[in-house]
Length: 268
Length: 287
Ligand SMILES: Nc1ncnc2c1ncn2[C@@H]1O[C@H](COP(=O)(O)OP(=O)(O)OP(=O)(O)O)[C@@H](O)[C@H]1O
Ligand SMILES: [Mg+2]
Image (cartoon, rainbow over all chains, first blue to last red; front, side, top):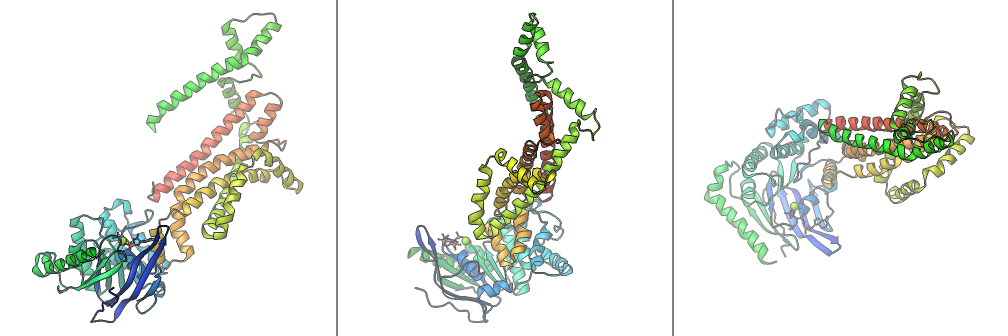
């Protein structure tokens, strides 16, 4: 069992999981969604989670976000419990579906968490304008979600998570439903944003190239029970043009990830 | 809209045809009876003419009802006790008051059911049970009891309207307030939204399509309630009173004209809600 923890060497951990267990009790018996998961995510890390369906990636992210209660072990976020972190609005969470409210404009959707947090009207306006620019949706503030393409909606939902300026971003397959071209574009933008803001990002994906392109570290997981089988530190530089994906270093990392995934499958 | 005109007119045409035929069939015995006593024999066209113009027919012909409606609306002062508009107005006020009360009660109960586990477990069976009691059985009791404590007039009728109209609102709003997906509720949780914020910003807006559908049913039920409420009071005003008076004196034409008025009223009220629904849901991007 990989109960030893995969530590980060450089910075103090922003998110730290120790021996995390989560067992769902279902009618068909218990499901071990997570077992003995330990991981440190350092400040400014971009960590991707990759693994076959049902290996507990979403569950792990939800534990960090206090949307799921672990049945064993601990998670801390910014040194707090996930509940305290959630209540101090330490993270932004981007769900797989954009989940914009149809009755609110794009601006209104981004404003929603800001209203909930009691941020002043003037400040709201400033932030909406800023994050819309960040995701290249300036000029769409007054549009309704149904007037936007799926990719634009997903960008709007990222803008919404960015709006309240948390240092941590938890993203669960945010680009899963998009076509390759749009996805490339959003990957590039996300990377720029990460580079500019120094946020800590935990990112779930099914795509090996996406994981390798974006991450400073790639966490490979495997199902039944859900666990971490490999953690790969990326040797790629922070500055990453899209064509870095053709370089030998990139392919080398991708190869290692693929090997890790295959090994995870092997011992099931 | 344009395309539905022809089918609708066709159906109306057939209904009128059927109505005239039924009038002949139902009223013919009386025509023959009369003729027999007078020692006459009637030709078919005479029978038809007679059945469509009797003073107290079993089934009045459409044009008789139309004439009665015309005479009691356009040709009477609105304040006159013989004006159908006056009576419709009386029923309308009870309907609207009952509708507002019923909608309010329905929404309150729905909020309670959605937010309170105890209410969730205990209230719904009672709500359903309340609707299995025939309204005709309890309407007189409500009227009599309220009269006894000195409440009469508009309010007792509105109570019966409320009794009928809160039900669809409870059912619809419980479903509507529970319609946000788990993901949307999780989203609210990640923002640390309070229950009130989740209600006003997510649950309530999400429930609007359900609310409007319920309101249409509630409005129709409310009108039925108001009319039923007017039956046992020996009421002097309202469409229900017209129905009752008509049946006392065998004034079938009056009964039918009151029914037509009630139908028109219902169609208008439900139509207004439908219009509101279209405007509102379009503005909310939910249609
Ligand atoms: N609320 C729940 N109740 C019961 N079982 C659950 C629940 N949520 C997740 N599971 C189970 O836990 C396991 C891990 O699920 P999880 O959603 O974390 O997988 P995942 O890695 O995100 O998969 P995918 O790539 O398909 O999104 C699965 O077997 C799933 O069936
Ligand atoms: Mg998942």
